Length: 264
Length: 249
Image: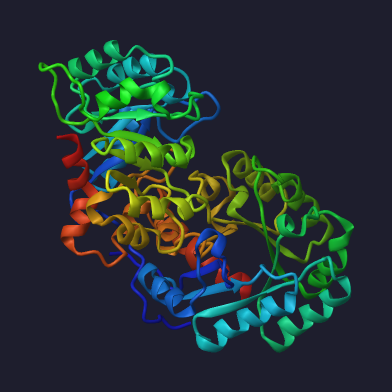
């Protein structure tokens, strides 16, 4: 069969722009062996594709206990914080907010992950109101940074109606919706159009034309590259991003710039 | 840049699926194939209770792009009186190259005797048969990988392709075990559940690239294989060499 008029599959793929992965978990899982769990595992894989940095959280913090997982994360990271940027988890139904806020300040952590479904609470103000106010940068003591702290949540881990209501009632809050699966695209696209304080991470946005559709709905400034490693491939979605006809400004923003902006 | 030709996608769907927001425009398919680097796509239509309607939908894709699409037949065990004539039409008149069955839509387990007339026909033709497979999702008793090991022993002339290679991690482990025990089992790569290991564990000659377009984007699925930690030779086999050999393309 002769070669046809297609682009060529690139077996030595490297990103053409700097990459700051917005969705990586470290640590072992209790229920299966993962392809990588340690900073060394991750950095080895990142180096294969010239990926500079990754925003990392501890799997244990989401699966079992946020506070313990956050401590484990800092221990794991050790001297790798130049490339691996810690993200803490928080459970507003159980954890002490004051203690958590101090821990984020002490460790210079600038983003938070919540998991309402796994932590078994509805994302409503009567459960999470104080946390939401803090994350939105409202009612903070003068000595703390006044900028909002962006909140990550998996699309599998939140009721869409709760999310929509929260984004509307607290416009200063910035939420990054992670791991958007094709089964959730029917509500994610209109929600991105309706709520300018919602961002979307791309790791599981694998439905046909997902990347252009999400960019069309949110604008490229609210779209973040992420891999969902080690569950997902570290570079597959990055490869796809480089095959979507984006210009360098769009690609750079999605691959790193938008995340850098959120963490300032 | 190291490149590969031919690249053959074994798993794509024709037919509209508005409930998850996907269209079936063949022009857009070909644009994405070009972006992804795919030469030919094997396409099926499993959405209609009337298999003839689905196979005619596939035929329209092929009519528009005869060099880019390869026809994959579909039949349903709910209408056994229609299944064999429709298979003969799909293979002998329309020139389709393989069969897709879908137990989760038929709600009949892969090993149920209701499939027997269809599989006997495929065995006589030494056909390639692909089915959805997974383990760990609702309904997995219909199509879990170990069922393929059973049908592979019953119909030894058929080349059985496990769509999604078991899908979730538990399914992938079982799929690899099934492939180890049956030389006529192949694993197809498309998934939205992450996971790796099928190629390393089952062997490069037993794994076939598939995208599941348009439910999943071919650029992402190509990226999973192109960036995986396997040899270039293995990537060549998975992305097209194995499918070309299996389907005689």
